[in-house]
Image (cartoon, rainbow, N blue to C red; front, top):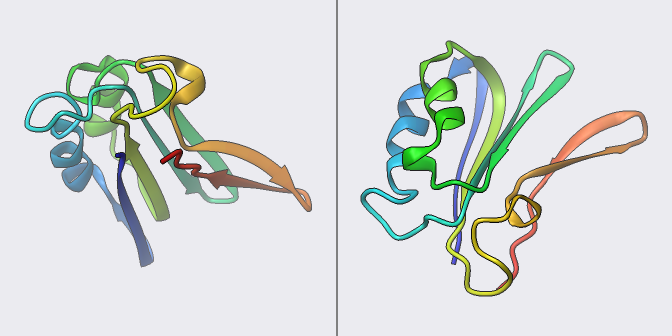
Length: 111
């Protein structure tokens, strides 16, 4: 089963500290090693990072941990494959979709 980390804040807030601990669960301190993803809004723009590598060993996750980003809302996901292929880009979440002219981030769990 997958694990999620989410944050909503009244003011733009850094999520680096929380994400750093969460990423360790992706292949270091837990078994969730089948990819990871993160999405957050920066102003009206959406940033989305995904990687089929374990979050604990991903250079993209390391960049996110070190880069000073602040947001009102974010969601991160680490995957433990119970169905579907493990460690493939098409099976990591979140992903983004446009609806009503707005970019949304979406999470879909297969259980």
